[in-house]
Structures are given as structure tokens and as C-alpha cells.
Image (cartoon, rainbow over all chains, first blue to last red; front, side, top):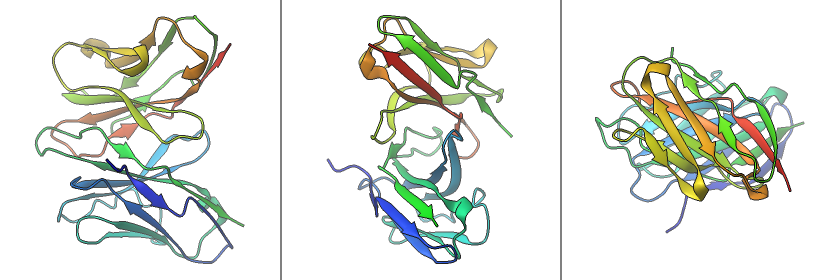
Length: 117
Length: 114
């Protein structure tokens, strides 16, 4: 079946502009995660959605970052007034979480490479 | 806060050499454990996982990992690496009873020379 898809695959933007990154999770997966991957820095957690519950935004680095998930499916990560330090690969993952069993394995998308000039 | 340590940041091996990548975590309770792999130009994918049962877990492509609770470790092993194993490897840990957000290690870059 289809995996997690993300768009665009690459985005170059000027400092100060807003950007929107999109994630289409695997159908039926209730959990959705956004991460940021910088060279040599591993995966930095940004935000987590689970079903209709309030999202866990504890990883968002500043109030310039926000995300929403519509209808329990597609998610959009928005970065306002982009800065050069926002340049990274933004990864989305979905998971078929079973409550009470802890996190299941995550299925990752190909990522969006964001370059802020 | 829990942490995950991957002590080997860069590993370079020749084909047929044995591989062991370390992963240690700081949480003392029950955990779910994962190893993910990212081949060049590809997205992250699951290599293997441990939830419960036999602490020796076998994954894809001949990889295995052993959960040693007393050492808070989940090291990844492969007896004989191939050039195609060149990739970035990430360990991830999620404690049961907490959030459903796994903590990832910084990753280990493995280069296998033919």
C-alpha cells in the first residue's frame, strides 16, 4: 500500500518568508509525528498528533512553528518568518499506535529539505 | 528526561567484518526499543524492534539486536557486513506508561568499503 508522502520534496525560501510543509500519513494510522533532521544532529521531535486528542507541541522550537492535522489525516507544518537556522530536513512519520502498549514502529516519509537563504 | 546514547558516531568497516553498534538509554522502566536505518537517498525505515519476550531480536537483512535490561542497552549486530549496509543507523526508545513519543539517538554513520 501507499506509504507516508510529503510535499514538497525540496523548498528554497528567503529569510523572513512563511513556508508550509505537507504530510499525508498512511491511511488508518492514528498517530502522526513531525521531526527535524539536521546534519549530525539526529532526529529532533517537533510535534505529535494522536487521534482527536490535543497535540503534544512540546518539541516546537519557537512560536514561529505550528502544525495542524485536519480530519485526523493530512498534516501541515507551518514555519513563519523563516530563519537560516530553520534549514533542515523535516520528516513526518505515522504509526498505528495501540493505546496502552507504548509507541509502535513509525513509518517515515521521504522528508522535505528546507533551505532558507 | 530520558536520553538515548549511540556512542559510535562514525564507523568504517571492510566487507565481511563484524558489526556492533551501541545503544544505551537512561529510562529505568519497561521500554519499547527500535533500530531504524536510513540508506543514502532513502527514507528512514524500521530495521527491528523489541517489545517483550526473547531479548534477542532478529530483523531484516541479517541484523539482530540484544536487549540487556541490566545494562540499559540494545546493541545492534551483524556478523558480516556488506557494502550495501552503508547507511545511517538510529536507535529509538519509548518508555511504556509515558508519552508515545520515542526518543532517538544521534545516529551512527556506517561506511562499508568493498
